[in-house]
Image (cartoon, rainbow, N blue to C red; front, side, top):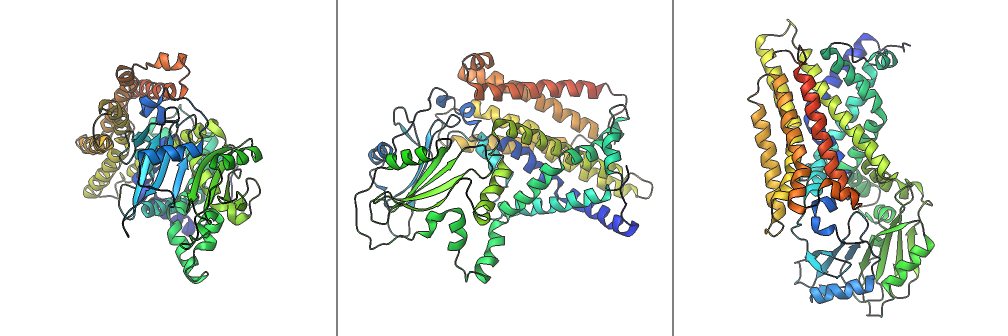
Length: 523
């Protein structure tokens, strides 16, 4: 089946737009998708990261008792400030507690702590002990780049959308024919050329979703600023009212003190009204005064609009305002909808696995796109100097992208090597990861043969992958068979996934080595 083709002039414009936009953002986009695949399981990775949390069972928390325990730990705890409580769950057994401390004017001091719900042990979390999932999550939107990292990720997503649209247009004529023409019996060079098109078609809805949501989340402040200035005279309250309605309740500094209703009672009332939902977090504001409020976030983890934000008065427990689950207006839905679509926080574990696979497929499509770009410039119309430049660009891009595989395995290994008793532990773990990534990248630049570069990164990454479950067993004594039999499935899944990745990588490499001709030739 052939569809109507673009006219030659428009085709050339679309082709060059696709090529330029793709090659400019390819390595940054690879980092976004690769780290984003791991960021999907940020919560699920916690028990593997922190072996001390593996024996902490899930229990319901008395919120009033929690506040009393925090007061004992932090005598200068400022209850009247903004206090955020992220409740424990099966994935994250500790309660995450964020609050203000009494301080001098213009010097805000904050509590950032983890609370053990079993024995009420409170651990300062200003410098977290664990950092693997958080590091990859922040790298997903370039948060390590101060100032404009988030905006950069947003612009990359925007250009990715251009690349998707132009890619569809240039392949529009034979889109269906090319999809069914893919075969593993062809020459290896043709396999990855066709795979770029075929896999991009398979992941097209996913990639469009990520391009749109990534651009919106990354550039949200830039998009909202003109609207707030022009349409709302600089007042952002109507915007936040649709997302976090509690922010529209201003603190009255002249408010009188008043007895507070039990936070646990309010929490139980919400659970009674929404028995199929889980309370994710609670935020109190101006606690102890007449205008005190609490905002409770709920979600069932399955529906795409099933989350809600309910605000109560802490003086008498009356309902002040709410974004009710499954009863939202369009404006109340948009932001959280974008977030859920982007991070896959609906549909359960199955959806996250599908997202992960599609992310890896997209990474392959990006790598194959780089190689296609390089091969297309080996024609006689290009001078030797131009060909050397194209080869160097390709080598740099491949080195940056492919070295992320062994560097990520190194990050997991560093999490077990660096002692939990070490001060600023997260700094050392992150340093090992970023320095390792840098070393792996520059090492790859010495492998002038692209086939050797691909093969070596695959071998190094696979070996390090196999070491992850081994080192976890040595350090924590939780060997992979033990975590399976003891039903610590989150820990088992991480070890098993790395073991499987290492074995598959070595098998692929073995097949790759016995090929009579490499993908890239002898360049």
